[in-house]
Length: 360
Ligand code: PEP
Ligand code: MN
Image 1 (cartoon, rainbow, N blue to C red):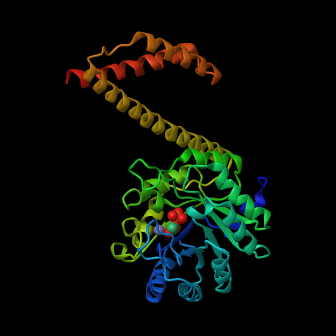
Image 2 (spheres, rainbow, N blue to C red):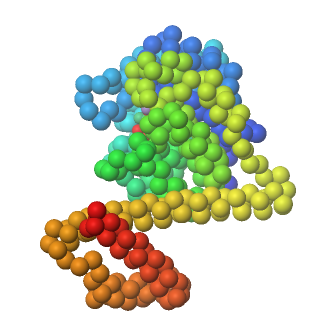
Image 3 (tube, rainbow, N blue to C red):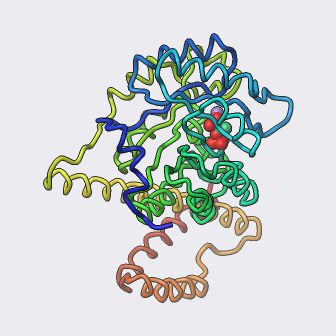
């Protein structure tokens, strides 16, 4: 697959003066629910109505979607409101049913993207259609796997493509349900600048209060759209209740977001600069995160040394570390002086942490 403007033609054809908004409930629940939310979303910037029909649940025994019946509700919602529709397909049978019910955009779920066999089966089932396919990132932070799935559709002659960034699983609990790992999406954008990228803040956040900030970061990084789980009664949603927002909140969010549009050279310059600044912000956050992790281990070492009555400062080990870091720094074009200064500061903070543990 090559980067080319063809990749984003389907999106440009909407001629929107704002990011593409895909909104709707995590799951279709009842006909009334789908129709009601569709009419409410029609009053917002929403272009595409989303609703999960088949739900991949982590553990059995939870609501697993209403199944094919829900496709009729989506079709009716489209007829009544003119909104386009999208749902997740996870096997060729889903594709067949979605095609029968005239679903406009199909998305590939994070748990499907990890499996090349299934992705290939879905791509083969779509060959010869002119559907738009949006590929969610795989659950694991692997850019090649994500791009590999996109390529399987491209090779099956599906040229209306895009990706959805929904965050990545981690064992460690963080403030996110799924870690954004913005760097992966930035790398993807750098490789395929014309492949539309849409943020799904709902599955990254897992909660309502940080949806706005995630959307703003995405727009600052030049994302093309947002897919936001929206329900008129979020607390009583049958799935993902904690992260869904009301259509009113969605409307407020899209009004409050700072949208950057390229209009002339000066604007383009500012746009590029601002994108790069956001990229730096992302990396700075990672730096703090990593330093925090390092100090946590220093605390544990402090506790261990305390239990064995060992001295905090181990000069031999420290000199070894420094030597290695200077060599590694050279490979990245970082001066010896800089590495020395940075690591002295890190080392000092580590010692302070250990001493605090040891001396209470
Ligand atoms: C969803 O969009 O409701 C969903 C199940 O998404 P994901 O594949 O990102 O978990
Ligand atoms: Mn969901």
